[in-house]
Length: 138
Image (cartoon, rainbow, N blue to C red):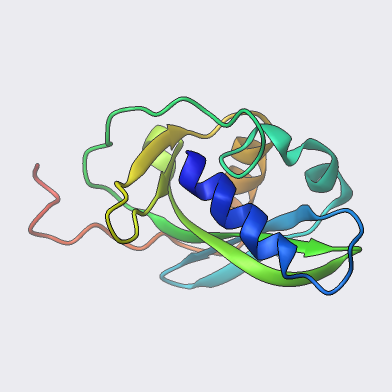
């Protein structure tokens, strides 16, 4: 959790202006394309998600299943300066933050506005990436 907060803060620190930095929205990509939501409710309510203060408690990994590649769109004054990558497993409403280097992968439950927006994006525009056949029976 701490590593993602550090990554998010570092990414936002490189934005060209010194004013408020924020998560502007979410993008969800599956086997059939991508969908984005940059609604005002996201900017106002994203603080409790995996990239905000407080975060969400870690949970055990989900069993393999259909999943989405996702991004939190980070920026300033409506302009996106970077994307913070994560994965979404809708069957368990789980957000997966991949580890980098010596960091471990973190699994968290999506809740509140994060869950609502991710589920809406999944319904609206794209099919999930299917689980590989070799993992489907696990």
